[in-house]
View 1 (cartoon, one colour):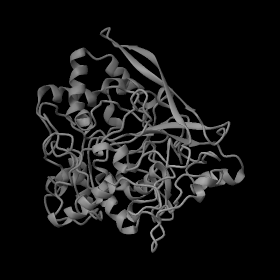
View 2 (view 1 turned 45 degrees about the horizontal axis):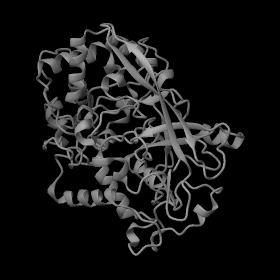
View 3 (view 1 turned 30 degrees about the vertical axis):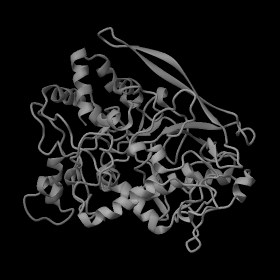
Length: 487
């Protein structure tokens, strides 16, 4: 059901006072938990996907996509799955890998378009990697960060991301090492939950030492569903929830990240990535190509990927640049993969009328979770993707930055986000993680082995909400988890 049906009762111009009033009524937080809300099952509005619940449930196009557009979606899917090879190669449209990389394909990190996880014992990480940066070292670098021209300063030798794979004839940069210690948390009913506290380091560095002030931040690949719908949320609706100085005194001080927009040539609202470090699906995709695979695009034409001037052999290696366009991914390919990423549909909710799920929804609201995990939005009527325009959606995020406390801090700034802040991740589809990805690892570094552990890691602005979960009865806690698993 689209928001035109849900929110409109007659003609109204886009952005009119009457229309805004209707949208406000539709997106008002729930107060009655005796039954499901109208349209609640359709998490993605008319773009919601109704397909069998199997490993491919995150890989379907928007439910309202016209038939004639589905070919573009499928071609974009092919580029997303493409296994890149080193240059030169007889398959010219697929060469240019690396020379240093984390994965050979987009699908390699986002398997079945789902959530990444930690590596198995003895395996190299693929969908979990380390971001790298250092504090500014001089006035020029401080100015770059202050103006927003750069989100961070990379390591002089290893750049902005540790690449643990390399093409033949080159050395990978090093290996991520993760060590865990148990942190027991006792719930009010006496149940003890052992959380895993990770410590990260790098072994087998091949290009010399890292900078002495290196900052490491682990990042796991996020699910791909609903990205176009998140992009279509009006900026004013996101900013309406920002309260950086906590003027209302509720302990929640969400704030936007302002990041460099390469198309706009200025700062824009960050929406994507664990710290809201990218403004659009297009730019997020282009940066993933170059950082994760070492593949250049028209937006980020770095054919050597994240290689730095200190890595001379990497810089001098052959590229797979197109003879006419000068990049390894052409404009047409980039447009198709962006269309694909924008249109991975959100699955329909399950069990919305189940009494246990409804009780869990009430617990979610009463615990204060909705202060950050905002349930509903109506997307912009004039958004340029017709599948995403003017839809009532249920992403459970405000797309703002929040201080999540010392326990989750990576102590690494990114643009205007500080070392304790993270963007509120969307929750839609979270209950299908095991179905799609075969695991239940959550949070930015996959430290949580299930949803309860993920909740218990919340601190900072979410400390009060977390404590309410700690104090719940077992029945209410299980109802809360049933609600989350219905999303």
